[in-house]
Image (cartoon, rainbow, N blue to C red; front, side):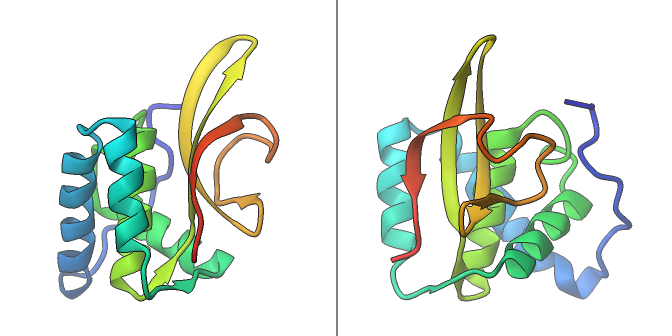
Length: 135
């Protein structure tokens, strides 16, 4: 994957606070065990509407435009920040982590209706291992 996932213009200052909150929450959450990440996300998704592809894509773009850490190889923090930002906006995408065996790699992403949101891989490239869907 390239060093920069996406080159987007910076967000207006008044749009940054919720994005920064989501990025900070994702930073903390990414340092937890997979079981704890999944448990926290299952609690946070309560009451949220399922996200549309456009909503998840906008959240991902806002995260990429605001966070240098998420705009590179940090797929776990990027996917968590995207998910948390969607939640702050009242929606929930499907959050996934998965693996590929040949060659072995792991990845985290968000998807809507089994369609991966703006990742450079085909939808079936990784086998999902942990999935937190909208309720």
